Amino acid sequence: MQQNSTNREDDQPNNIVDNLEFQSVLDILNLNDDQFQEEIPESNNHIQQAQITQEISQNYEQRPQPDLEGEFYKVSPHFLETNSTYYCTLQSRRFTYYNIKNKDKPLGILDFDYQRYIFSFVKSKDDAYIQSFILQPEGCEKKFEFVVPSRTREHSKQWVSLIQQYIQQSIGFQNNVNSLTKFHRFWRHERILDPQILNQAQTGDLLIFRTRGTLQNLQRSVTRSDYDHIVMFLKDPLEDLMLFESSNQFGVISFSYKRFVRAKSYKNYEKILYKPLLNVSENDRILMHTYASAQIGKGYSLSMMKFFKKSTRQNFFCSELIAYIYQLMGFIPESEKCCSFLPGHFTDEDKRLDLLKSAQLGPDYIVDFYYLQ
Image (tube, rainbow, N blue to C red; front, side):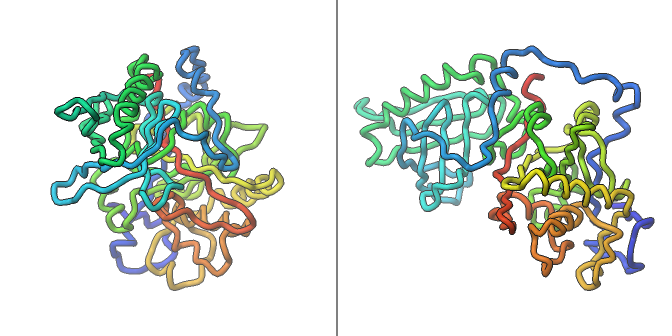
């Protein structure tokens, strides 16, 4: 990878960390000024109108009681792994499974409204119960196969009947929706549409990226994370919703979220997560916007020496910049080194970052830009 030398704080020999680069999400090669001046067309598609009403839960309200709940063995896709027991629920055209010891965070969310599924099952020889069933996202090789244990057999036919009913009633089935299969491990996350972000995002909310490409795969292996870039939203009622980032191409900048969408820069990523910042007052968000704006124009830097020297606060890599803004707000302790934060630390894969002052990061939402395409 080419090392950005213009913003380096330290003239140190190259090493693996020094050669990591957090690329900008602004794909200016795909967008000229004439294109940017065009308004993004409003869609009258009834699917979008039906889904746009979905709101992010700002206070972690629990979902209604499931229509069905029980335990199943999930067949492992890996030959040498044994099947494990999972707690499963079926509710509102959604099949969800959890670790049997942790029912707070789902391990898989199969929402029939968001994705069309192929459903099959195997009956017992005497037709008394269902032995197993498979849910497969259409257009995807991934299969979710569950074996019915003896303790659940009594209700197995009820499960199959209701799954069939929900699939046939779902928006995903009726409109042949297959957009989620474009995303890496989409079933791990809740899902949100791009227009919802435009309406709901606030200053301090985050977008976290998994970039396509061999070099980015290497970078993620070095950082031991599924993600390799992070940006923060800035919202001002007098301007477009903005993205705030530090990258090796441009340093610290902000630019319009609409511009990012218009350029279709999202196609450069295997997956983009939206992470809302919760329990923050409007005054704090205004202050956060001020702190962020003061950093614009500063440089980009990533080197091993950052971990050993006191920061000058003049050069940042992407997640260091976000951690610094959060630290200025008192959400991260002053004793923490901002350069120790990587993009994945802000996701659920890091078991939820514990913020101070009652602030809280909400769950990961996978952003679906392809739903109407």
